[in-house]
Image 1 (cartoon, rainbow, N blue to C red):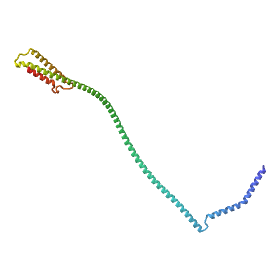
Image 2 (tube, helix red, strand yellow; image 1 turned 120 degrees about the horizontal axis):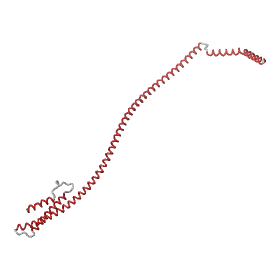
Image 3 (cartoon, helix red, strand yellow; image 1 turned 180 degrees about the vertical axis):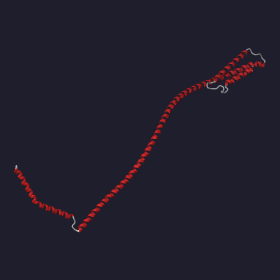
Image 4 (cartoon, helix red, strand yellow; image 1 turned 45 degrees about the vertical axis):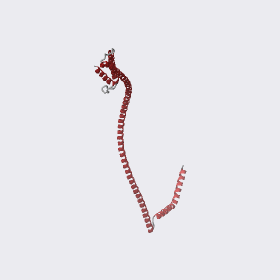
Length: 259
């Protein structure tokens, strides 16, 4: 137990002795190196001092120039940034103006859209009204077409009736002419004995009666002609004088002559 402590103490003392032996050599070397470094760093003559000052001035000037260049570059960068900021501001103002114009255009377009919507609604209402009017017009046109067809049919029927009436009137006029000729013949036969002073024949009464029958027949034919010529849709008062009227006049003249 004591021996290890003794060995350790002996080793420590030996090491301390060796350190004390080599310490002056280490110290001298450290002093020598330190002195050499100091001599190398510090000038030992006036020329070295002047050169050192010149070197320091040059280093300082180079540092100042570098600082000035950095300052110039920073100033140029700042000026460029200001220019860019001015351009950006101008661009922003232009964009703001464009935004204002776009907003005004949007408002105008909205107003135009509202106007067009109202016009479209009015046009839709007008188109619906026009469609309804067109439907009414179509129905009225259909009714008018039906009425026109009916009127055309009635006109055709009236025209056929008129043609038939004209044919009948022509036949009646021919019959009237024949009756007039017979009446004239009978009148001559009746009037011949009276003009010569001769005695009337035995059949004078019969002829007079025949004459009366013929006159009556003539009146009936004239009345039939008048009825035939009074076609539908015609004004009897505005129609010109027909053969029946002429027959009545002619038939009345023999009566006045006989009277």
